[in-house]
Length: 126
Image (cartoon, rainbow, N blue to C red; front, side, top):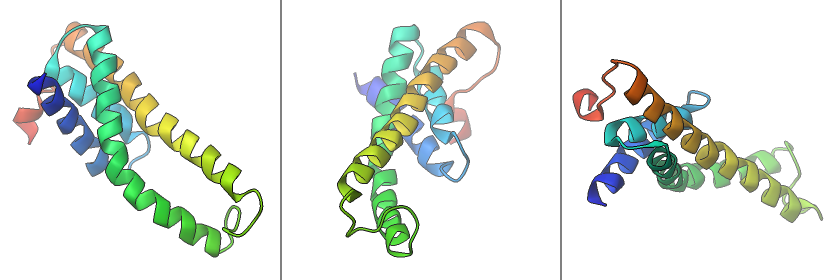
């Protein structure tokens, strides 16, 4: 269990470090799953866990940015009647983007580990 949490933490770190690149959560999930090993079920689990761990610091930056964008006139302003629905939809897409793509990256990481000779061991790079 400790190795799983460590691998997910490394994947979350990769996601946060590459967050300025689109679809960085795929890379984080792939690193988490390739670092740990195991089957496809384990890869999806580790990718999902890495996405949830990465979602916390990304959400701490995303919520103030969303509020400021609303104040500047982008999207729906915070005082509008549909603002709660807008926030729910944006959060659902954020969750799907971060956690869902990280789980997909976990599948890719297991495939890369099993079908190639690439060495994606995070200990080698960090």
